[in-house]
Image: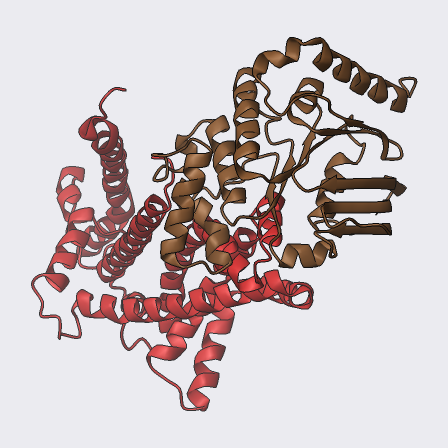
Length: 263
Length: 294
């Protein structure tokens, strides 16, 4: 195994088979991938391609059945125990009985931060996701986009270098989504995090990523890995540039190649 | 939104039903108590008209069905006009029953929660305990109550505790069922979140499972407090009708004191309603603190 020090996630021939009542399901087969420090990696593919499963393997929410994977140079389990990643789920999953600031404090309480430190971190992360002033609100008082931003703040609060995001904006409308994508890029730039981002939107993947991992189902596998040539500074209208469209079309081709429509 | 009118929305509907019930009650009083007056008149050999009978049915000593005003007068006489220390005071008897109810409810709640925590966290307990919990409630309480009293008396425990344990026997059940459901109510995504934080089982319990279960707990508590009272009253029947509302009911039926029975019944109903309302207030207060949408 060759793991460079800069490698945050490194998967070698990774496979995961779920045993179901209808027989085994190959959620992942032969995945080889390196995510380097500071990368913004998007995983894109149709449902059933294993993109969420792969993210959950990194997070130690699923155990691989074959191959090897390291996260921050250790096993996913140790990485989880070291609290080395923050996970943003598809739904905000805020606890409804806690205010926004109390929700952000949740991981801090669990990890034993002092009250003063908690306060400082809450203020800082609320500012990072532009929610300053909403700390005392309960989740239901916020819009869906704001709730998802609060959940990102919660994942950022304990300073994990790796951010795992599972279709965080999937349930939001396109206007809110554009806005959040722009904010996420700024946040990534300001915090120097490594981000693994699951999506099924081609423009979203191309707009955000430095590296796009195209996946396909049955069995779940990686069909293409595209290094983005877009500059780090990305205004929203970069999406009309020829360079952007070229990458998008390569992603689309990768998706089409991996997907047999006659099924 | 239109401002809610307390009189129109709350007082009116309840008032109308109450009025209807009173009318039905009075009509029933006449029908059920008339035969006694007829028999009395026949034995005395005097003819009696219906208009003469009517007022008599309202003021019998031992009516088949006492009139509402008789019951109210009895309650008034045995609560307000009687010192609490008196053995005939309804307040005294209500307190006896209430203390057993509250003790039994308290033990039942703690026991129910502990069982639920065990069932949720331990597969073996889930498999082995739940069938017994359900089976316990298929035994009629009237059958098991005297057994509990007799057995505990034999080992030297008497007085408040045996009655309270009968309340416990009834009240732990809704708590177990409700709390098992409540402690299992967190969504997978909320549990996954705790997993990613490497939270300990006790942190997951106190920060997620416990708060999630609050609505279930209070719904169960409302049921439990009401049946605790039933348990306490049933527990008073086999103890020889010494004191408590159950004793008043039993003594009343021995001596045909229907007015006494009905006043004890109403006291029990009022007590149950008050207890449920108090739990309801606690429910609202807790949910409000937990930020539930107003």
